[in-house]
Image 1: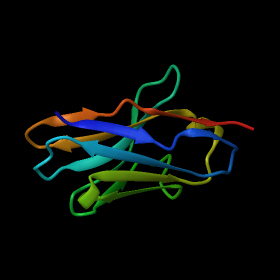
Image 2: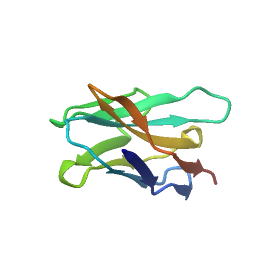
Image 3: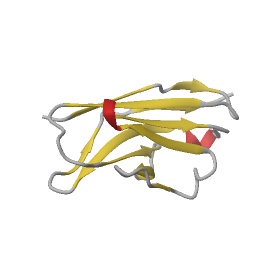
Image 4: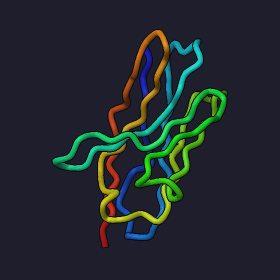
Length: 116
């Protein structure tokens, strides 16, 4: 069974930075895409960024230029470097992987709070 565990969330001031990490464990044998989503209180979950097994990346407009997704495939890990954080970035951040034959698997989430 595959599990995803996020870490690195916390409280940060506006304009600050955080780096989220996601570790994937379990029986991962196939090539997969990794990514990050978030859900703010009272809002739908929104996809922020994803990175394929070949390193291609896609970003949602609200975070483009501020957030950077990366991965270490050898360690089955993904990262989200978040810079210039804003109040509206406050949310629970979720890591996910997508596999062609298994669909999407989600982590439990990590809270990010941007507040002065």
